[in-house]
Amino acid sequence: MAWIGMLDSATADLKAAAMAGTVLEYGKLLQPSVRGDIPAGQGTNGRAFREKKPIVENDMTADPNVGVLRGKRSSAAFARLCRCRCW
Image (tube, rainbow, N blue to C red; front, side):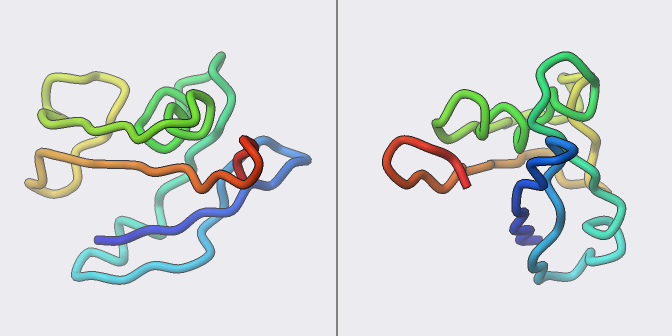
């Protein structure tokens, strides 16, 4: 599944802008945040945004902060940067 999120600066949440793949119903449930102080911000999306670098999770079953995607065991998140700012 591919999921593209845009920052909602009022809530610090990442809102779905586009999705593609075979598990779209799961993508609709995603509610990642960029806040580091809440559980929704501890996954690959929030970490990539805060750290401004790609985050790869090779074993989602071993990380309690990352939800398991119906048998998928790995995930990667990439924050889009422009002039060193995520957007």
